[in-house]
Structures are given as structure tokens and as C-alpha cells.
Length: 463
Image 1 (tube, rainbow, N blue to C red):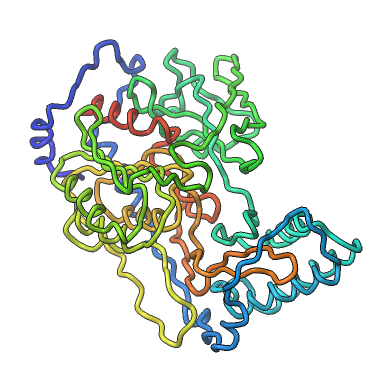
Image 2 (cartoon, rainbow, N blue to C red):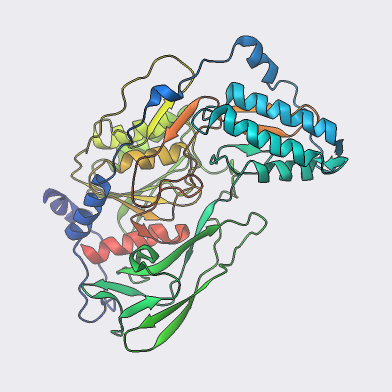
């Protein structure tokens, strides 16, 4: 439960509490801020660090000759329209799987020789299906066959092995959670939603345009990389206890922010400090340790604020040390992981981080989106262990299992491959979220481009 002194300090913020015309649904009270935080804190405290035999995944580091064999030095241009023979394609497959065995961190975790050799045989068989391949068709075929790799950092010349899971919001009708179920402002109670028997998994906490805490249906679907804007392929039929029904359509999904999909904008600053409705906001757009002084200044700017916002919605990662130090500067002590993260090349197993709940008198709202990835997700994972943190936005990118630390180039097709060389991260157990390509779930779901404004409106209403 949050401490009473943050409420006293909040008065000094002179937050604009202009709530005229903003009323909750009849006879459905909104929770207090204390009640919301108590509920969310309890959910976060349920997350448990996984218990694994890390020693079983340790491997001997590759020798110098092996490292040299796969070292990327003279980068060759890759023409996706060029053709290679089936025999040369097979040579590239052998080279790739040799790199897996020598360099890939999760190799043992994902089944080792038995699993990887079986998939190699399948790809080699497909290589013989035609006399020659365009490089692009060869790449796409391999990407299909490598779908057994649940690794969002693994990159096969700009192709992932699985699609990212992106959120679709059905916000035509706001629902309020009561003791008898989900109810509309007009008083209709949801009996069922066709095809979705578990309403509590479909309905997500959200924020109305007026700043109320409401619930909307949210679905995750695979991202279609060929489209700038994606349309959900489902409509929802809501059936009410009074016998009526309603059809809901989702809003299109689009990536938010100054970043294009996986493309950094060089003009985007590492940090940005501003205010929204009187609440201090620090946008942390990178975990680049070359900018540590700037990153720590952004944490220092928030640490004494009774309510503050950390915006990670455009942070595609970097070095996890940046997030570690940001949190330490903010709350005054180290905040541990929930995930287990270790390097598999070596002979020593270090002790896992101690499961620890870190007290925090103030309120930190963390904004997330599908561009929140890798080292930024490591920061998110730690922040689950900090008291009075509210995650608002979209599910994160889901770049959790490895790092993007090693790059090779196939000798014939010249396809470039990115794979994690030794880091293995196993996410903590939780009811929802924390999966590769899917990411961590927010406590309150809203589109990333609306998260900052809606979060401030929610705080105005609940204070």
C-alpha cells in the first residue's frame, strides 16, 4: 500500500483537476488510487523467479579457430534477386547450422544436436526441391523452417522466425467491472462474448477518453510486416443478459512514434524531460550506456516527484546496465530481475538474483509499447519488483531470450544472420505475458500513442 506522505507532496504539484463533465457510469464507483495500486502491487508480487538447473545449459566456449571461421569481416553485398544453385544453398545451410552449434547461446536449451540436426535435414531436403533458388526465396524458405526458434533477436537478413504479437483494441463500448461481471454505462451486463468463454482474459483494464478506469476487449494477433497499418481479422459479438447483442470492431494497429519498425531515428534524443498535466515525464528512448550521464539525470529528475512517468514506448534497447542504473538512481537501491539471465559459455554458475520487493513511497507510471524491446524489457522486468509502479500502454516487443550480439554472413547467398552468442534469459512465471514475440503485458492497456495523456487523465480523476 502506498504511503500517505506521497499524497501530501502531490498537493505541491498543483495538478490540474478540472473534471467538469467527467462522471463515472451511474452507480459504478471508480476505485481510489490506493485501491488500484494495492491491486496492482499484489499482482506484481505474485511473479516468481523461475527455478532452473542452469548448470545443464553451460557449454564450452568455442576455440579461436572456430570463432575465426564465423567471424564477419569483409561484408559482401547481398542481392536478393540473384540465383544460387541447390548445391550452394545446401552449403549455406551446413554453414548456418555449424554456427548454431558453435556460437548460439540457447543451442542446448532448445534441444541441442538432436533438435537442430532434425531441422537441418528438413531444410536440406527442401533445398533439393528445385535446381536453383533466388536468394530471397531461399531466405524465406529457411525462415519458415526455422520457426522452431522462439528468438526475436535472431534475424535472417531482416526476417524473423515468428511474427510479433500486436494488440487490437475494441473501444466502441466501455465496460465497468462490478461484483456481477462486466457492465456498460447504460446498465447492460455482459452474458458472453462469442468464441471467448473466459471474459477476464479478453477484457483488459483500460482508460476512457475522460480518464475513467474501464475495461475494453483486447486481442493479440500476429503482425503482418507487409502493412503499415494492420486491420484485425475478427469482430466480437457481445451478448447481454437482457437478450440484446452488440458487434464490436477493432481499431487498426500501427506502430507509434518517431521510430519506424526497427529503424532508429538519429534525431530522436536519448532522453526527453517535460510535463503532462503537471506530472513530470522522462522519455528514455535508448539504453545506450554512452549516454549514462544523461540517462541518470532523467532518473534524478523524477526521483523526488510523488507521481512521475517514465516513457519507454520508443526504447528499442541497448545495454541492460542503463536500465539497472536508472532504477537505482530513481529509488536509491538496486532492483533485482524476475527473469534468470546468464551466459552459457563458461564453467561457473553464479547465484541468481534474490527475489526482492523494493519499497517505493512515490508512484512511477511506466509507458510501454511494441517498440519497447530487449534491454528496455529488462528494465520493465526489474520494475515489476518496485512498489507502486503502474505499467500503461501496449504489450512490449518480446525480445527476451537472447541478445543481438553475433553476426555472420552465409558464404554463397551472402545472407546476413544475427544471433545471440551466449546470453540466455528465461522469463519469470506469470499468468499472462512474458513470452518471446509477445512481450510483457501492461497493467492498463491503451494504444501507445495515447498512453501519456490517458495516464495523466487517470491520475487526475483518481486523486
